[in-house]
Image (cartoon, rainbow, N blue to C red; front, side):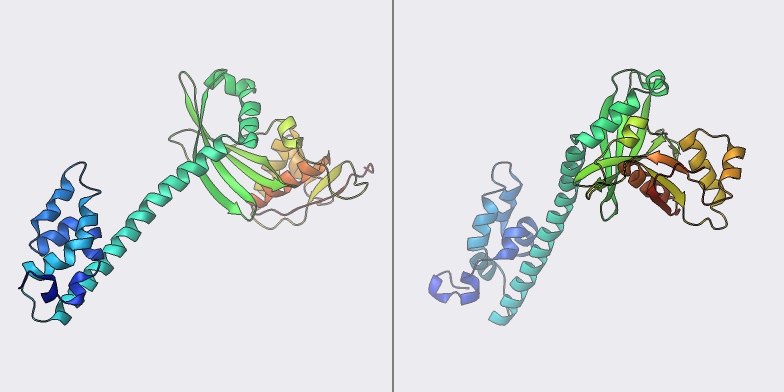
Amino acid sequence: MPDSNDALPLAAKKWNWGAMWLNVFWGLKHNTDFALLTLIPGLGLIVPIILGARGGRWAWRNRVWASVEEFEKVQRDWALWGWAAVFFIAVSLFIPVRNFTVDRMWERSAAVADAVRQLQDQPDFQKVLGANPKKRVYEVRRLGRERFQVGVRLEGQEERLKIRLHLMRLEGAWLVYRAVLLSFLKEPGVDCPLPPALLASGPPAPGPNPPQTYDCRLRALTYGQERTAVALAADLNHWPLEETRDRLKDLRTPVCAGVSWAAARKLQAKFADYGLTLDFSPHSTEP
């Protein structure tokens, strides 16, 4: 093929995206040894740009083409595969970078820090992890419209544990309503009773002159839910299981009485995780 620019078809003078994005593979296919310079450290960012500018000329000169149409089709296919590779690589890089950024954001959040601090103050935790374990967020999942699950790894001097914190957005603030304690090798975890200060913390009820305290009651209890409801209510109130089972036979009995609006909303979300619907209403002093 002639070497002068006048002899080149218009397609060979255009920017060659296939040569730029798939440089080494494109060069091997088109007998262009210059593309191998991409593998040399320091030239990997410069050579692809040169290939994009000059690749069409070299491809036209270094291979035998039946027609200009064949040349255009082959280079167009290389360009499509090149953009597909760039898209795949971009997505592959974006997901871990995004996850890392989200994890660090939750790790620095006041809600997670407060929850971990409150749990660390519990004697049982201190026996296992010591007073100042290292904290690391390793997982963030969306549970609902304004609910998230944040996995936190705690590493003490001898033991390592994982805690899954369930958070909900309430009046513009993220609040913890449930904590699940796991070890590194045991799944699933067990619910960890939240400290009263953490359970009750949160904004007051909106609106003018709202009630100060509320009672929480189960809306319904279908077959198969009794054991779960009894376990949750017993753990929440420190009631014996038999007494809790007798109390819950009457759905008018509050699962939890006299709690703040924020605590009632947290309990409602926690019970919803187990498929139980909890309603709350202003606290009543009637027996």
